[in-house]
Length: 254
Image 1 (cartoon, rainbow, N blue to C red):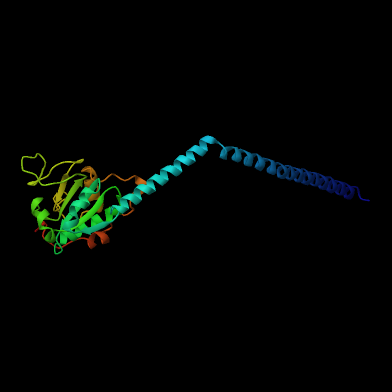
Image 2 (image 1 turned 45 degrees about the vertical axis):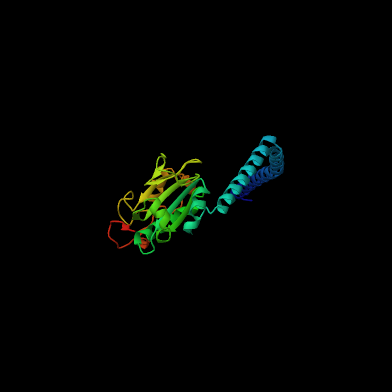
């Protein structure tokens, strides 16, 4: 046999043996890893079971459930009082509505005034976001008694109320709202008002967020957390145009 041919054959056999050995080592390593995995999974399951039985974790879970239940009960109670929506009321409902909640925003409006419709749009958008405050509106033409007593001369007029007991008393009282004298038997009375758009830049195309910030500053609503804010807090141009009016910049008069 040719010496070179023998040499080549032996070399090939040696290479094949090396590859076979490498393959066996790799197979052993894979099997070892597979055997180790169930053991690791068992340890993880044991640790998780121990964690679930932790009394501190159970207490945190119970506290969280209790807090969620309390919040749900509070929201339901507010809904029962008319919170969470922008509602129309009558003059006969007025006192019960403004004395029945801690914080109330009441919009005195006129059906024919465009600026009142603009204010309606913004307040309707804010009402579901601020459950702690009641949002209502009252047709000024159908509420002459309170329009007179509250000294409302310009529309739209948005008045902010805190929970209070109310009655007409002589003008010697120190609690006045534009000539309307009230007795305080609770936590306060009508605390502030917006007349026309003078505090909103005097223009019709203000943002809902602009009104919201103003109401927060006046303390009649609370600032929402970032993750609770509506994505369209700043309206796109198309939505702003939908609530614009073509009236003169000066507010309408009743």
